[in-house]
Length: 295
Image 1 (cartoon, one colour):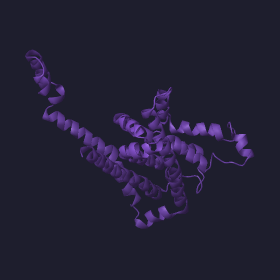
Image 2 (cartoon, rainbow, N blue to C red; image 1 turned 180 degrees about the vertical axis):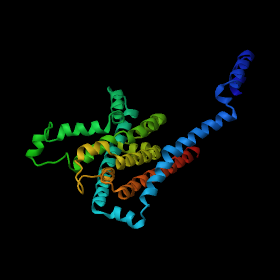
Image 3 (cartoon, rainbow, N blue to C red; image 1 turned 60 degrees about the vertical axis):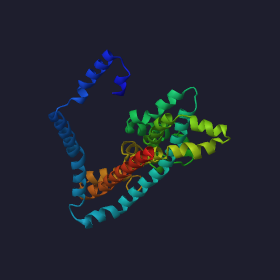
């Protein structure tokens, strides 16, 4: 109505007619019901039902079997290795994500668009291909293989290779959360801090990071969830050595292939529980971010 009031009478009438007959505002009740029903059916069939099946199968043989599968030495080793890979890769990608977002949004330089494109590379490259790249570089017959063997350094089929693969697949998450947010905020506050005599570190810690703290936390959570659930790249570089280079997803695969279904679903339930916790934290962060914007 405010827009129409600023237009001539004829233009206002056309604007009003366009508004009244906009197809996006004239769905019938049946259309809304059908769209909602289709959405709910997809949610139940493809998301909720598989999740319920995982937990049902995990507890099908009782608590004793469930706990036994989780405290088994190979399972404990897989948990520790998964935690180790996440504990190393997430902080590394946190540092990179902040640095990349700061560079892309606060500075103008040649190759900026190339950097933004390369950040998205792990989204377009199959994780299996990423694992093969590391094998090509650090494997026994790879580019650096002879040097690594001569100095008794193990990367492929060892923890360093798993960490490298995890870093690659979780590479974009923090940066991709921060870049749009920092672009929307602009450079005015940082420029004002610089004029007032603040150093680069002071500007980063006292101006930039407080403004993007919720987006930063959201990116870290997504990065952590991806690190816990990675399968393809880690599978290629791990060698599937039980008790040594198996992460939780790889351990689930081995148990399932050995027809230990109860144990496989028990371990898988940990990953499913992590997904639920991630969604809960995500919702909390979105709520806090919305509340912060409203104040």
